[in-house]
Image (cartoon, rainbow, N blue to C red; front, side):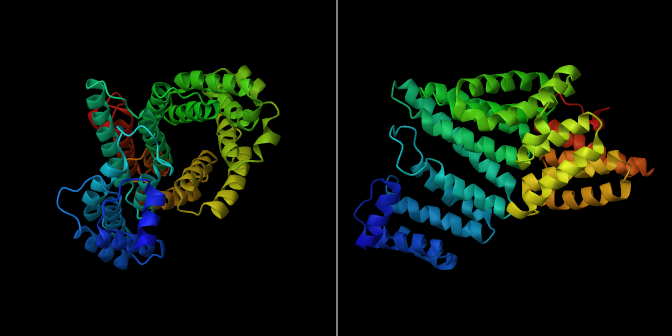
Length: 402
């Protein structure tokens, strides 16, 4: 029992009431979960709850038991049963009235849950969970501000940043842009000044905007990235990312001379990293250099396949670019087969409302239209535009409205 108590207290640093049976069983549940003995973890956690009176809130062992019941439900691919337990546990884990951040990273339990949902192909539930937690923390913030009480802005900032990361990886670029902008705002409220994190967020906002076609807006954020990089020699590793994306933005906004000037010498630099290689291939595609872009993408895909796997959202985004390039080079059969394969996996991994799913439908529609199958192409275009309207806002036209 002492070991269970010490284990929980060392991890969560919260209040643990004197409930010997509950503390012990909560510790057993945690250990069983680490050993992937999920049924034992769930049974132990449910038994632990019996040692606590109704209405218990600020108790770490009780919270841990709720958390592990939720995780076990999610592990057996039942996110709906998991939801209520996870919501209750997260309300106790994360409270903006606590000013001192615990020793563990603030979003660690939240990250564990979202990773689990994504791994079990429930991306939309992961997004909804983040949204509900952020709404709760924002409401807490308003109440504390109304009472002139201090607020832990850093906690809300961390949530927005993690939500931005998740949204981007799943292809919800409108959401990722909004979340990263909010993270920047709350870092200011928390009086933080970290040049590395600021640059990362500015770049993430710019990338999200580029994926939505907001090139002029992305230009200003990329300029801010370049300014931060010039101020710190420790940010030299980031410069190629900014430079290649700026070149793409210049190309997309018809500033071809600036794009060519900035892109000089990039070819050798981008080979070192699959991320910059992908953006460089986009630049080459914009310049009509389809064969060279295809070669670069294939190099990036080899690395991504080895490191991420073929069902990773980033791998699928990159492969989707390759399908588009095959279409642009007239290889309709290869392009359609590739896009169809991507679409089947994508709709499971990132959901039906991801903009990446919409972009794959566009490739399918282009291939079908080129093959004369206009009815099918029209259906696919409608699906793509409906997803875009949901993802980017009501100002994006939908074919069904015309």
